[in-house]
Length: 158
Image (cartoon, rainbow, N blue to C red):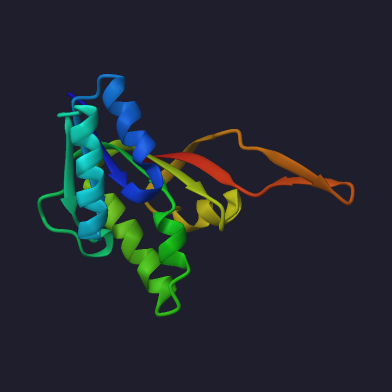
């Protein structure tokens, strides 16, 4: 049985559906907003996806119940935390600590960010994680150069 911790339900509900439809049997989605959990719960119920658990959790202040996951997917939570005007640097460090706590050793962390470059993410997750793969993202060209407005990386906990 493979467990997946999905962060920011409002942003990645399609991941919950997709993972459930591919046969993952122990999926957990978290969000700090009770109304987001309630909305996701009604959609999950309508879809008949009984293998998804939803919990109200603040990823920066986790309960002791969340641990032992093999995969963690983030599409926006780290970005949102990084934009917080009050203590963003400390909150990013707490995010990495929380991530390390919930993932098993050799667990995978997939992150998609529109605010951080690959190099910046490598720096943020340098302690306790190693880069396995950079996922392809759309590129653009301007003024003779090309780049990407999104970074998508796969890390493994060491």
